Amino acid sequence: MASVGPSAASTQPVLPSGPAVFKTIPYAFILPEIVCGTWVWILIAATSVSLPLLQGWVMYVSLTSCLISLLLLLSYLLGFHRNSENWKVLDSLYHGTTAILYMSAAVLQANATINSEFGPNGPLNYQLNSAASFFAFLTTFLYILHAFSIYYQ
Image (cartoon, rainbow, N blue to C red; front, side, top):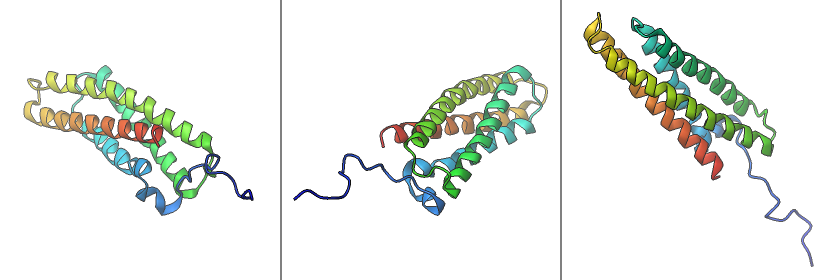
């Protein structure tokens, strides 16, 4: 006799909501992305910006990504996704695009770090820019991990 329930091939994976977001692997990366991204723009804001075009792009990418990731985290916590498959596509596209943008920002921040080594404020700006570069590359890595883990889930 045939079973009445849905087949295993047609069931959708359950998207987490509430505190389960922090326990599920692809979605657990959102909070570290926000924290590391916040450190990027705080550290750049603490320096005397010598290359406004380069570091302006880094500030734009980090601040915008941080705010959108915060909205995404709140959406997951409040369960706005309603277990929709489209939500996974949106999440994957967002994190993939943000990983590319963050990679460009991290490279530009590394360039600004190299240029600030012998700048007017010397060691302090160099140390702050070095820390911002580190967190920019770490955030890029987190966005890449999130995008690929959503894709392969």
